[in-house]
Length: 481
Image: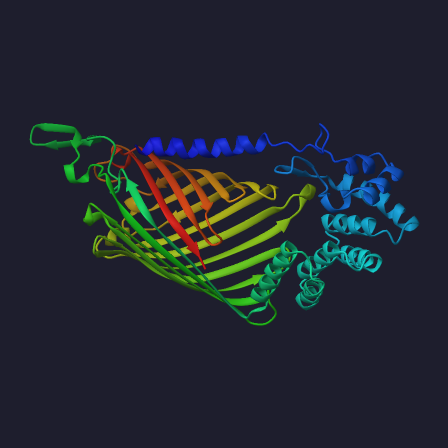
């Protein structure tokens, strides 16, 4: 049943990708170019002016080829060629609002916010009632961090009694600015639903495991049977989770701030001894700029198994994100470090320090789809060397947003090599672990929706005791406030 759930979820994701890939835009040629892009590429200045003044081309152009659902940003060379043609026209027709507007949109694509702002201001001078130019000018000011100026432009649009849809959009943007200008920010998320786990105790897949030859009297054992209580246990039940994130800006919004994160998770299974509970609190600092984000957390947490504490943790977790725009696409370079001390309640042999370093790159293929890949190095110390290891893992994944549906998929491969051999192990222990994850999140209303998660894990170890398969399915509702 677990594998069936996995196949259904993956099938849904493939179907969504296929539907989007088949979407067509009737106003583009076979190469996915708009008429305005073709005229700019060929330097047809008269055609460019005709398209701008006699059609709505200026207000629908995105400077990307392909379908509306799968835009492919124009290259820097193509953007520069279009920029040259439009500037030449600008010298001859400085007061044409559509020409100024499209220059503003292109300037933003070229990451030249100052020229974009100037172009939209010229468009408004020539056409004071141009609500679209006012909205774009306000948006550029907001991107530049000049929230007061952006607010004035939005309020000016409202004062002109625009259509209801425009007024609603303006009020939403003003609300976003209000939230961004606050010193104190708080957000919460709640999840609740059903969970099914076919190997909740992570039991070995085989009933008999190979061991180093063991002599008892005159009998030599090369295999031992797994006790019934240690074999895989299938369990199902309910879960609930809550997350509270708080941020206090020390000064200018988007600069340095103080963060507090609270996380809680609990499930209730039909095998009560396998119930788990998790609580974590983190304090840290955060700094955001136009191209980077830094966040550093000091945290502590506890995990319970059944009604008893399992492990306490305390750790430090800094992360740094840097944004690039190669070829017009956003590339996020994410570096993260985790240092965590783990103290087990009754299993002292596992106590030790964990250190993990991970580097991830995420590429935005479009505004609604991304791919990513990363590597992680890990070292886990333990009081008993047989439970200490060094590991390397790689991950790759993708995300896709289609209207109210957001899809995630990832695959991670990990190899852990242990420092010492266990007494019964036939050879030095090395674990190879595959983990496949898929998630589909559907937004039902503004801040609520339904979420389906599927995780499949397979471990192949040189010691059969740690060979296992596990499939976990979670279906629930979520709400963000």
